[in-house]
Image (tube, rainbow, N blue to C red):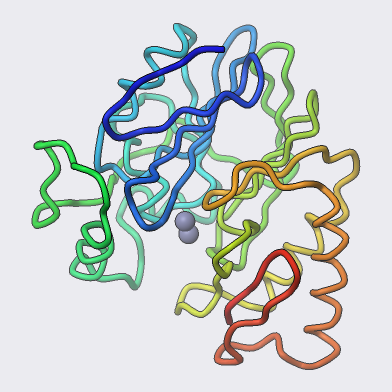
Length: 262
Ligand SMILES: [Zn+2]
Ligand SMILES: [Zn+2]
């Protein structure tokens, strides 16, 4: 086991070649994931941008790193500027280059600075905090595959929380990385102007149909959910449709192990 002591990030080793990089000092409890292949490493999201994530990935690998963006929300692209090869879904290429739509910088600065429970690095200034913008090295589409060497990653377009959200299946191990479309504890949300409850429901149904999933890794809260949650997801989505609740403004819908907010 590799142990890394760090003032801001917590590294959890999932297996020999897979790591979660978490930010527990912030209320969002964001996770990014580093997957080591034979030829390359894939970094799924880059966190809040309060501190420098490359400091951590440098300690974990010498491989060239490709960053796979689950979606272009500020809390998942924080350290994008520290990496060269960034991939994003076609539907959010514009947000990556020109900035996130319909969310004011004042709101972002408020959210990044609140409820922080451990010391932040002196380099962090919430008054000037600005989400990453820049050009991607490549565009991802539904069904694309990326092989990082003995490790094949399949891209699933799972919009609804945001238009270009992707989930990633690591076929070699049955790990499904779900970003902000599926996690536990706090509601998965689609109540915001750029969200779409109906589309999110379709995405969750799509995820629930992926075979051979052994573990689910979301962008927030618990690291590693058991795959039988997918059955619950499927039933829950059918129930929401039957009860005509798949609309903005219907509030929080709670199920046994997860919840959604429209
Ligand atoms: Zn998000
Ligand atoms: Zn998020």
